[in-house]
Image (tube, rainbow, N blue to C red; front, side, top):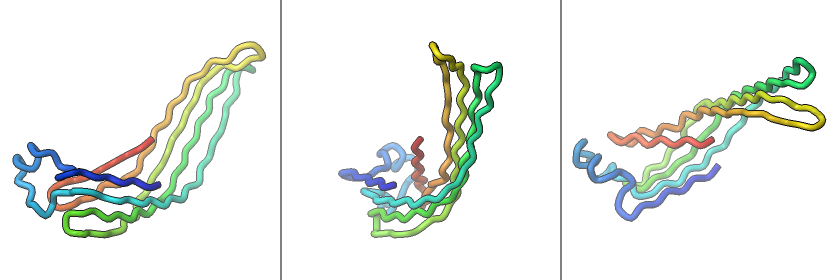
Amino acid sequence: MYLNLKSDSSLIPDYYRSFYSVPEDEHIINGVFFTYEISIGYLYTFVFFKNFFLNLSIVPGAFIQQYEYENGEKKAEKIAIMWLCRSAFGFNSDMFYAGMGGVYGFRATQLNIGQPNFNYDMN
C-alpha cells in the first residue's frame, strides 16, 4: 500500500499546535508511507436449514511500514501486526437471496513524532 500526504504549512491543526505548544520541528508538512504485508487466513461457511448460511473468516498477519516525513527529513521503518475479520449471514434459494455482512480490521500504524501522534487506518 502507498500513502502520500501533503500540506502547505502543517498537517497538525493550528489550535492543536498552540494548545499543546508543539515545537516547530514537529510540524509535519508531508509524508510518504509504503506498507508491505503478509497474511494467511481461514474462512468457513455454516449452512443450516438448507437455505441459511453464516460465513466467518479471520485473517491475521504482519506488515512492515517504511515512512519518511518532512519536518526535519526523518525516515524510519516499523514492524507491526494486523488482522481482519469478516462475517456474513443470509438466505439463499433458487429464486431469492438476502444477506448482510460486516468487516472489521485492525492495523497498528501509529507513528509517534514527538508530541503529535499520527495514526491512519483503512478498511
